Amino acid sequence: MRSLVAKGRIRSMKCLCLTHTLTQTHKTPHVTTFPHSLHINHNPLFQVFSGFLRLPIRPFSTKFKGGPTPTASSSSCALAQSMANFDADSVTYLTQREAAEIDETLMGPLGFSVDQLMELAGLSVAASISEVYKPSEYNRVLTICGPGNNGGDGLVAARHLHHFGYKPFVCYPKRTPKPLYAGLVTQLEALSIPFLSVEELPSDISNDFDILIDAMFGFSFHGSPRPPFDDLIQRLVSLHSHNQIGPKRSVIVSVDIPSGWHVEEGDVDGSGIKPDMLVSLTAPKLGAKKFGGPHHFLGGRFVPPAIAEKYKLILPAYPGTSMCVRIGKPPQIDISALRENYISPEFLEDQVEADPINQFRNWFDDALAAGLKEPNAMALSTVGKDGKPSSRMVLLKGLDKDGFVWYTNYESRKGHELSENPRASLLFYWDGLNRQVRVEGPVQKVPDEESEQYFHSRPRGSQIGAIVSKQSTVVPGRHVLYQEYNELEQKYADGSLIPKPKNWGGYRLTPQLFEFWQGQKSRLHDRLQYTPHEINGQWQWKVERLAP
Image 1 (cartoon, rainbow, N blue to C red):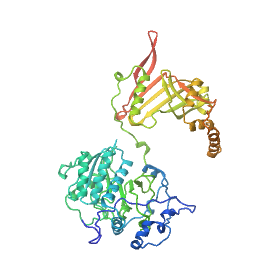
Image 2 (tube, rainbow, N blue to C red):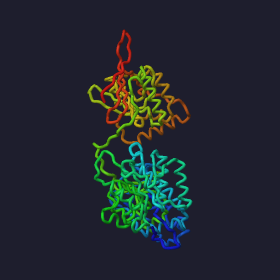
Image 3 (cartoon, helix red, strand yellow):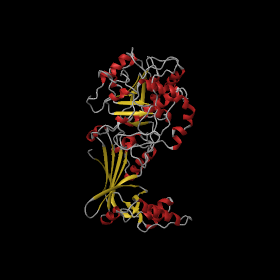
Image 4 (cartoon, rainbow, N blue to C red):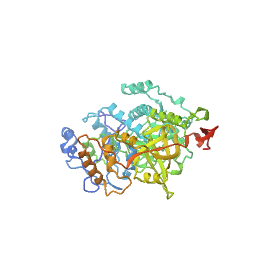
């Protein structure tokens, strides 16, 4: 394994996890410029290294194909996928020499250390994997690590994946005694992450692992892989093709460049690894143009403007605080193929409470303990006299023996429909627990004093918002709402009591039917229904199992 970097200069197995983020566009369409503080001629970093880099001083601008400049507006990679997709043909692809030069500059005059860059590279790989392959479905991960920096990235990725909820394994055939790598191994051993020798790997590794991370060779490798890596590469080649059929199969993730590919020419004869995901680092290498898999991500995000300018880097913007961003359009999804095979404990009749209110409280407490977001969110469905149903999400604000309470504007659509047909259905869905609860029954307004008490327990901003919003009516724009809100905010700035609107208050649904649903394998879900029955002159709840 050799690097193109000349003797006496920094040897690098790969270009690590770097990028620059394009800023928001100005009035001129499709043109991106750095803010004043980042302009190269004002950047202290450039002033220090201007003699070294010898760059022309001019604003950086780029013309994009296929849509407007992406902007960083969220901390999720998923948001980047939903933005105007950055055309993969517009991205900068680096030659092997350019990638080596950038590494040399970063770890030389710009002061980055190998372990610093390796940490960010591995984190980017783990973040990219978590965006597409959730640990609930793709839990067992085998990371195959080479002896150089690419392998180090794999070791770091395995550590982060462990903390993300995956179950990683590591195959690291050619360990190096260097302290950096020895430290990474110690960190993984401290987490009880198993290390497997080549001999301990099963003959068909796809049976034992859901994700196979190819972290063997990076951009600086050339020549023919030596044992045992030649055999490991062939195992990945033989077990996988994009045409493999099945509801779920193991997937291959390659770090920076698929091992065995030519860095600039790609999979020359078509006989190499065909990964499902490629995580490019710094910028894609020329060989990545031959990548035909569904998921191409860019990892890391800290290329200084001087390097971005020198190499004319055109890269997609990272959203928010994310460590990865998708290159190109996400794959087309067959909606009919989207499904979840639920794994849950059995929900049996002899385990439930006799009173469904108590059973609901138990499940609600479980949702709270699981840290689910807004476990009190529920879909409220109503039907007016025209027979047309409507649904919306509201928040449960009270629960007692008499039923379920929420608050709203009585003159909204749901308010009008409940005045015409005072019956409703509630639906709670707790995704993290594979559970939902359906409740049906008649609805009536809560006493005004009860609404008054709750109204004044709300934040003052929410109280003002309830006055401003004539819910479900047409408004000419948000500015109208803001203007009225600001006026009321000033009016009650002295802390005086904000009066509850007469058309605002609570409803209580008195339950006449409960259904508790828990997802199970092969769609054989548990469904237990409670309905009231009169027994010996007394009303009691009857529990029955429904077919899924």
